[in-house]
Length: 367
Image 1 (cartoon, helix red, strand yellow):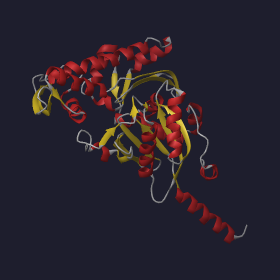
Image 2 (cartoon, helix red, strand yellow; image 1 turned 30 degrees about the vertical axis):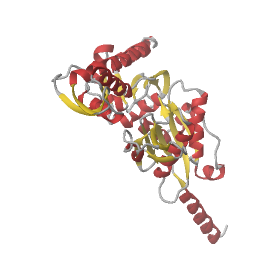
Image 3 (tube, one colour; image 1 turned 90 degrees about the vertical axis):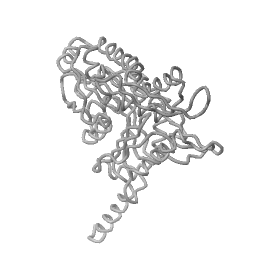
Image 4 (cartoon, rainbow, N blue to C red; image 1 turned 45 degrees about the vertical axis):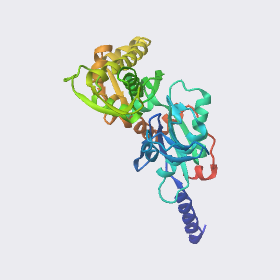
């Protein structure tokens, strides 16, 4: 091949590369969608919600823009979460939402993504998995790998993929809690239960409506959880926060003062259920694995791991040491991103791999 031919081929390859962005790690949760792009880090961290026109069904806003409308929607709009408890509840809106986030994550003029690794719940059905896979394909991603959240969280929390001893990770999200035990980069036990930090929001909302006669929105309930809730005995149970909403009896605007003790009264039953699931999973482990976990304890990841005093509460309930991973909310997406550097591990643990949407372009750059 002549020099000019080689140069022409190189320029053509470079132009094609500009149309195809690099690999993405996608943690698409019930509460938030987090996307990291290889070489650029986390580029998307937005709420998993869309604003929809009630009449036409058209998606008007996605993510942060839709979240701003939540609780204050115009009468012809509705803000919805298309994923519930970690699985697709509304395929069309999930597709639009993922396409929007992926487009935002791409840089420059790129229109396609070479590869993506997506997290999925333990025990997800083929139908639920296929719905996510189809949404990713329609977002113009060349190849899609799906990896269990528990494994990704463990790797993202710093568990070495070649560690011959067992490690246990509890990932607490908004809608689900994943409990996973891994050895040598492989899952040997995994359980996903549809309970998470959003259950605390729902419990707070229900208590105020039933016992205080005040109806509040999701954002207010979440603010109460973040500012007042604790998994351990609060230092000042009488501390209060004023919240505003709608009086249930009169329908007029109203406000009440809510104490730390009130919020804790509904927080504890939720975290007690999480502790019970952790205990139940640990009782099913082989003896040697149980011995490893006794030595090492548990690692907490996910947004729910940031609840004040949760590590101390679980330590007391399960009788093991408990630590919280660095930046626990990003543990899953970190673990997914690391798998691009472990291609053999990725092929071994991926639950499924989609057929290439644009095979020629994908194989040109496949590493």
